[in-house]
Image (tube, rainbow, N blue to C red):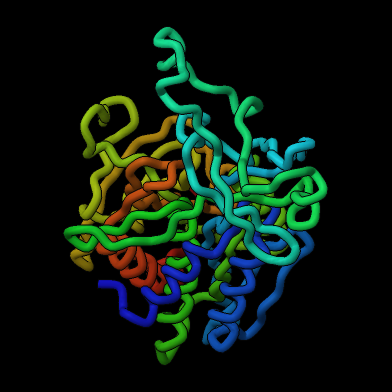
Length: 357
């Protein structure tokens, strides 16, 4: 079970807007959260936050525990004469989902509420009811009556998020937008918090929340180069396959509540994978495994190739309905991921080499 005080932070982090390129509000929360547990805390020019906790032994390996904090969203691209806002996607937004949604425009003076207009079904010809309305033909209605009225409140380039927050469901599950990948950023801070409570620190721990993953894993490339880790543990969501219509044969089986998912394949150091799998078994942490033959579409892809190479592992948390306003996960999976990572740190410190031979 995620501790109550930590859950309060988790909810605040998830509900704080952070579309790619506009992560500052979420990263401010992260910095406030980790400051007291860090020997060094910095933000780079892209916006990545790195909190360092030095090892008891100065010769210990540098271990980067990392996740991206950005979310998908929208951006205002135009304002017409009647005050309606045109927009484009930030990251992978499904145009099917957008019409009829309530949204918030995050303007300079504060959040502005609006809706994405949806034509009444009575007015849509039967032949067109199954078609997707292109995003370029959708508009946001904030109730403005003119361009001047709108420009007094919002501006081209303002980011937009769906106006939904986190809610608890049955069986210790939660639903919200932006669980991809605020849940990973939360795990990073929680690992740092709990490691700081220990009497010794076996590794030089680099807790890094990265930016701009949803638009091309951009932040991690800079963050990994700056951190120069020996080992990287990347936390990310994965497509749950325990819903009607899902097929575990093609994407690997991932089920809510059955623990973190360890990825095997070219993007993962095989020695580090074995270490994590053995650690899970020895500490009775429920764990799942999926195979990914090539590079993944995650921060692990660029971190693994940073500098002269980084021993990298990818740990996923099962997520239903990814890139929608109703993403769902099991809080037990977050807790078990934190347990696994904390138990792995001393074993990483003891490992002689991660060079696969």
